[in-house]
Structures are given as C-alpha cells and as structure tokens.
Length: 320
Image (cartoon, rainbow, N blue to C red; front, top):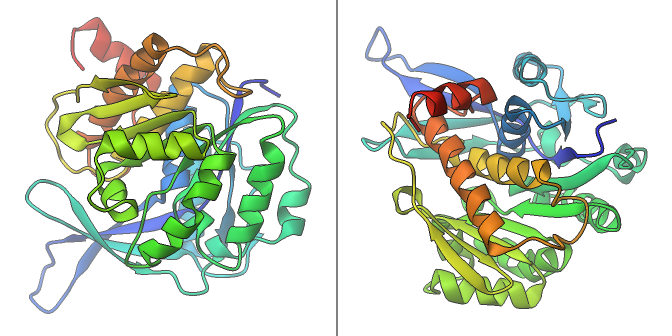
C-alpha cells in the first residue's frame, strides 16, 4: 500500500444536467457521475495520488455509472460498500455564467446509511490523509458514524474537511452547530465563499479564518471563484489569484481545487500528521497548483477533473 495514500469518505451523486429536448413537453437530462467526495477522489487519482474512496454504492444504473467512472479514473474501491438503497440524484440548471443551481432527490438513498460496522474494518495503516465533507457529515443516520471514524483516523492521519454546504437538503444551522467540532478534528479546512456566507453570515474571510483557527484548524483555504483563494496557515495569510480560463461550467471546481491542494501537499511529504514543517511558501505553491486544476475542470462540462498528463501538456506549451 502506498504510504502517501489519501482516503476519501463520502457520497456519489448522479448529476443530471438539463439539455434541449426534441419536443416542448419533454425534458432531456444528461447524467454525469458526481458528488463532492467522489469528485475529489477521482481528481486525486487522475493527478497520480493513490486515492481510495469509502462510499456506499447502489446497484442501480447510477451506482454502476459511479463504479465505472471511479475505476476508470484509478480510484481504489476495495472498501466500497454494495448498498441496497437507490443512488442520490441531483438535477442541475446552469445560468449564463456556468453556475449550477441544484435540486436534490436524496431521501433514504444509499449515501447516508453508514453503520459503525461498515467502517470498523477499514485499514488506515497506509493512509496519510483522510478527506471528507459535504452531506456525509450532516445527513443522518450516517453522520455521527462518519465523525467517529474521523476522530479515530486523526490519531494517524492528516484530516481534511470540505463542508460544501447544501442548504436545500440540510439547514445551514446544522452545519453551524457542528463546525467547531469539525475544526477540532481537522487539519485542513477548504470551503467556498458561498459556504462562508452560509456558515458565518456577514463575516469577512480573514475573521472567519481566525475563528476556525481558534477552533483547531491549522490550514484554512477559502476559494473565491474568479477572485482566487485566501489561504491562512495558523493566522499567516496570502492571496492566490485564479487562473484565467474559458468557463463552460463550475461544477466540481471546488472539489478539484481540494484535490490539487492535497495532492501537492502529499507529494512533498506534508501529509500524515499535523502539517508539521509546512510554511506559507509551500501553501502558496500548493494553492497555485490547485487553482490550475480547478481552472481545467471549469473548462469542460460537468465534474470532469483533469489528468496529470493534461496539466503537463499545458505547462509545456505555456498554457494554464
């Protein structure tokens, strides 16, 4: 087992995009495999990190789509749980800027039914980092089980969390009530500017970083779309510009940024503990790399993160 492996825990979601139909009384949907944790795992694997996804995969048509996509991306599914429940479905409508508004079909679906027994046998001896977030941390009945798993994993692995707030499914107050506890568990907290506004309304990004540092998170990164990202390491801060690209849509961009960040930190030996030895210069390099990964994701339709060879080709010709 690769000692720098990253284990991702969380949901797979079928992202259905509305497309022009042949008749006015029809709706055409193009379905792509998505879900924040699944997107992050796929992106990590495509970048060359040994990535394993702990997911509950339905046997339905969407579950088979998830499995094929993740395996083709190189994700290890050896601990994925075959689930009897249906897959979660999200229907996305894109605005003129490529921003997606989702409606969710997630009642009693496979992703939220984690039991302690399903996670008890997971071997983390070769895992340098455990990443989770999104709905897996707040949807019952599995949320408490996921938190317990993180608490146990923190004894040997770096912990990374992306809250990825979904107010249509879970009230923001639920996230707010758990956020201090998550910060006490996590070493890396990556979230979007939209998440910030839902979690700490009216709070500046800098003030929010200080609040989350005080609760325990060492590295906080707030992504701000076209305005780049703010990174704060124990209160030392820097701004990283976004990478200019032609935006098709922004679906999965934040997940790709997280993957790029963790991949870069892992490749330089910073994962596997409490980020000891990490300095602001290395954070800047990791965020710049992550911004390139996110930009490439925005340049194609849906949550389709780039492969390392694509990044290499663009670097060679002076592109992104």
